[in-house]
Structure formats: C-alpha cells, structure tokens
Image 1 (tube, rainbow, N blue to C red):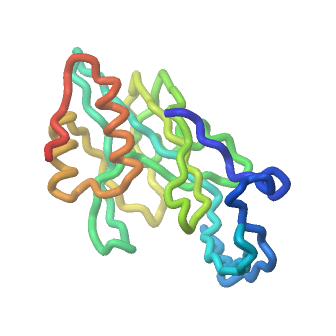
Image 2 (tube, rainbow, N blue to C red):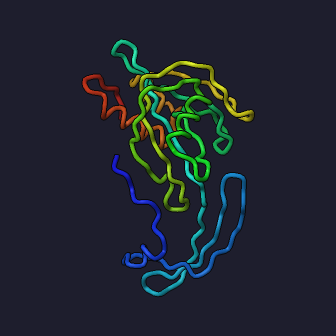
Image 3 (cartoon, rainbow, N blue to C red):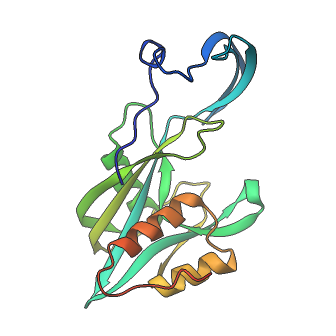
Length: 203
C-alpha cells in the first residue's frame, strides 16, 4: 500500500484546481475522542457551501499473522460496537494519542487486546477511513513472529481474541461478522501476500 498524502496545509492546497477555501469555522461539538466543526467554504466557481467535518486524532490497526508450521491464521478481536448495536470481528486497533509514535501505539494495542507481542513489524501504509466527512488517518501494520501473553484491555473494553484461517475470515465477511473496512483491507493485503495458499473471498 502506497503512503497517501497527509491532509494538506492551506498554503499547500491553494494551487489545487478543486481547492475549497475555508471562510469560517464553527465548533459544533468537542468530545473525548472527536470534535465536530462546520465550515463555510468558497468553491472553485466562486459560490459558497457548508462542510461538516469530524476531526479525529488518528488510529492504528494491526494485521497480526500467526504462523504455525506453514499454516497462517489472523488474530481478530470480537467486541460489541455500540454505534452498530452489534458484535463484530475486527483486527486489533485503537486511537492514536496526539504526538505518539504510531508503531509504539500499534504494539500497545495488540498487547492490550490480544496479549500478543511480535518479533517482526512492518508498516503497510496509511489510509483515510472516511474522507468525505472525517480527517481520521489510520496507520496499518503487519505483525509476525507472535509471542503469546495475557491480554489487558481497557476497563470499559470487553473483547475476545480469536484466530481464523483465510477461508474462515472470508466466510465471516460473507456472514456479516466482519463489516469494517480496515479489517477487509487487511484481509486483502494478507491475501495478496499469501504466496501459494489462498482463501476464498466468495461472490
């Protein structure tokens, strides 16, 4: 995955033919994790419009691959997602603290949610989760050479680590247990790197 461009500063973006110049900013909500702001902008043709933006400090996510005698499994976390009112299966992930090193945060999240450490880490890239309304940048890492340990999730987190083969993971996608894009993206990356063994994404 190629490293995407970070959100541009205003002085960098001005030369873009599609640039929307911010004229006014109103903070609508300040929360523990996100802020929500409304912007009045000038469009390329001179008209004005409004944009509502969710500001997020960013996140990390981990494609943790266990290698057992040539058979690979992926470590996922089963947890309840209140906005969806349902339980999902996802790769380990968490909020990036302001100013923190993304790799250090990825190591911490993997250990907290699954108990695993890892001998080998590789950054796969950075992607923006919902650029139409949010500036959240997610740093995706691959972890191999897993070292088991005891999970220690946050006090308000109730999670369970599970290990799935490629076919089992794609079956979970088809059943609707895996529904978030960061996990599907990680599965596609895992599929791409699989060599001879391949899962079945299905129709």
